[in-house]
Image (cartoon, rainbow, N blue to C red):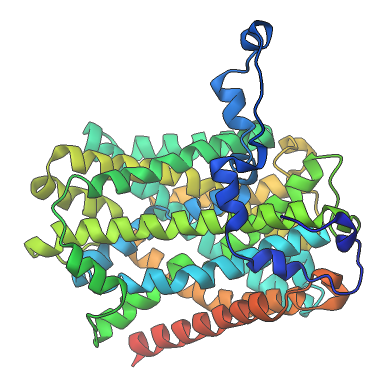
Length: 474
């Protein structure tokens, strides 16, 4: 249970990290509903006015705590990420499953820090980073982020078009164009609250990959060994794939998106304010962020594991080890696992792409507009936040151009991963400086556990980037 609200009014001894890192007891309570176990007697009149299933689900305590973190975690499994996990499973079997076990606490920590910075200060990451880094450096990093996100958008749209062609059999470019304008139109003209619910619903498309596992014969002993790293892979190819998995799970655009969504949540609720202004809201806000972020990152890594296990059990087991895209993985799966498994994989690519493209473009919009001091927010109409929506539109349309350009989308995706790795390290360092600063965060600054995990994530990402550059340049 939470202590009295007075403890959150800035008194000495208050440590918000206690609430961020405490055990998942409250989560269990929320799931089984023990917080409201008092018996009730229902009259016929009350029975007639009972809310429908949709209202009851919307008002469920646990579901009410899921939002920005869940969407962020699900968006991490975009078609480009699916290609990375598929390559890992196809090339190395179950041998690299441990990477997703290792990245889970690091990913959860850095995303929790991102969310807390937005919720505590009421401002996005770009604004806060500019307080601890020279502005020209911030703008340079954001320019690289925009380029990387745009390439990623293009690769994801191309993968969605290819997956639709595999299922329906015609005109990849038309599908790619349709997905691009559908995504852009939703961002431009659908109010934030409705749009956020749409993205939440799309997270269910990820369970196609969990369902896929139940269609396949699995070697659970080998899976267990892979999860704890009993199958060492001492090769340059394995090192490159490990770095790619780290780069896929810990990406800069996720930091900006979740932080900005926390700011949006505050802006959309008149009774909520940044925690620096309303510290009494801390217990509920921090518990929600903790549950939301852990759930989102757990979902992200669970889906990554499902994809690696499925491709290891099928493609690797049949000698198919070279996968260049998510569509390649779906196509290779068809003759081995059957049409239903192939269709699940392909439809999952489309669903995750519809979720990820808005997050990639939107995070670029939030980052650039926040740094430039422009009005931001998906609840505004395009003419109310022209700069913000111009960046989003440019990211989608320029990304769409990759599908018609002579650029190899796989090579473009590789260089976007390189850019993301280069950009991530200084951004993560700046993020941790902000999160640990009493001047910026007050009593809500990251302490030993959360701060330590955040800095460890930064160090791991730096080591991964150096390794990637070393392996590919030597």
